[in-house]
Length: 56
Image (tube, rainbow, N blue to C red):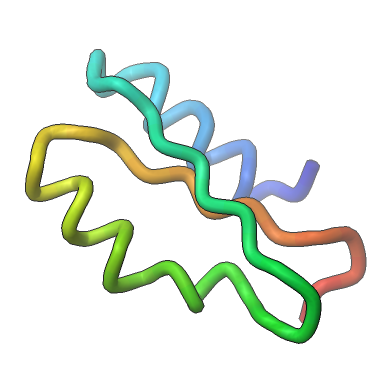
């Protein structure tokens, strides 16, 4: 787990909100979920967008 991913998990745990985990597919990056993550966060969830090992 990267430092960035650890920060996302800590933020999700501290928020008291229901987490939504977005997993991207091959040839995509966690940022592929940015618009959906914003939509879910605005609806009261907390978004977690982990990357695959060795993602840039």
